[in-house]
Length: 268
Length: 315
Image (cartoon, rainbow over all chains, first blue to last red; front, side, top):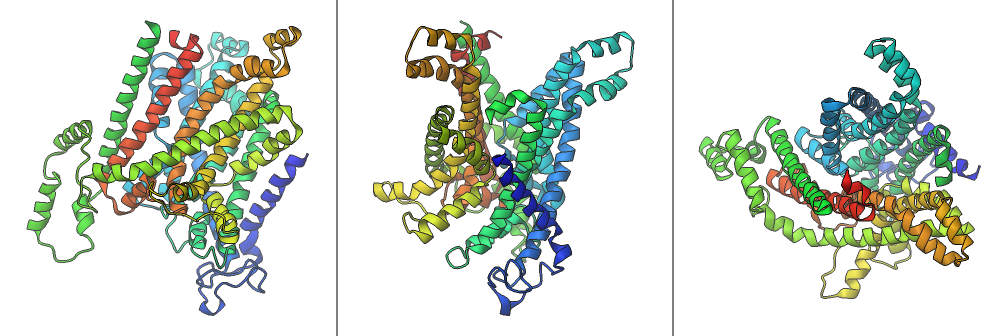
């Protein structure tokens, strides 16, 4: 049970970040030169202020909304695209299968962060670009899982029976195959949200994610790094939230996977 | 011979993939409205159309698109990526000058990450503290992005304790300082790899341990160490190899972040700065080198897989 404690604390932190603005309605962009570098626990600025005197809690909360929104949206897109590709490939076999799965291989042959950098270079940084890039990056993962699962479900007797009965392809895929592969896909989705936060905040750190002055967690770490020697909290606080968010979703994904496939239990 | 044909096929597919990636990038850049010359000159006002035309001609942008694509691919084969817009030097020379730092980082991090991971994974099934370390600390380390880990290491080991320098590169002529400056970036890159490899090694060992041949080996009375090394670890390492290749690929991405954290002027930081000013020759060149490296790793791991498991190359 010990391994639950850390993810639990992390989850509470993430919830705190999302709920933050409801508790303390402060403008994340409001500057106050007189209140620069306020320490953690200052009345009115629970987590202190940054080099422009902006409230860190408000910035963390706004960052959390953007960071989680992009992660969730891109995962949903990747999930639908990947599952369509994977299930179609596994169900139709033959030429379609070869074409789709080799395409997935090509997508996997570009290093993820490099691909993201390139798309941002071409389209310029913005939230929709970010969501699109992340969706593109994580589609192959879903396609692989959906493909493998569909192949194994497809040979089971009830699917064979449905085919013999002459059930339409659509109803077999939607009614028989999808419900049987949904559990591993959910686990994959949770792990993907974690990766999306990792890559998305990394792009923010490089200054290629969300445009300043809109706060992003990665961008806050990059800004905080400049004051590392004198005010380490500016880096540590956003860093802690990034780690918490990733830890929460990867622990959730691992738990879901263990429930689905108890064999994995020994592996962790 | 089966294996030679298998290797040849893998290398051909790899080369085709590199060309594919380049063509995709080239076409993607064409889609963007405005050409690089406009992007270059957008900041400077009052430039006549004759200057724009001259610059276009200099960079070969006045020719039709298929000709440029052909020129680009021919240029790649001669390792000529064109002239960098921001440095006005051949992109290849600039990339070559930045490559050493990145290669050093990747090779050292891969070595320490993979050997450390296998060691930790083996320890985790044999000792109690190893088990705790891998199953509790492992997931936490995997949740820490490289740029946060690097910043925390700088804060702890260089700013607070003053043990190691916070960044920068020292020349080879000063070996001690050179190594000292590499320690933190390499640790930052190697820790998550070690955590992943340890997790996989542990899982595989637990799987292999229940096989019949292990029981037979024990029944023959071989010492535990011999059984472990010869019968368990060797068989557990094949999947570890695949994961290692994947991790090496991820390492290239992580280097981009870590180079920024530690202020190292390698290929990754070059790519980032080129992306922010849209220096296309440098971007294309850097991506060419990186994707070639990435694909080479995949080919090598596939071929090694063929050696370790002869069934693979027969398919």
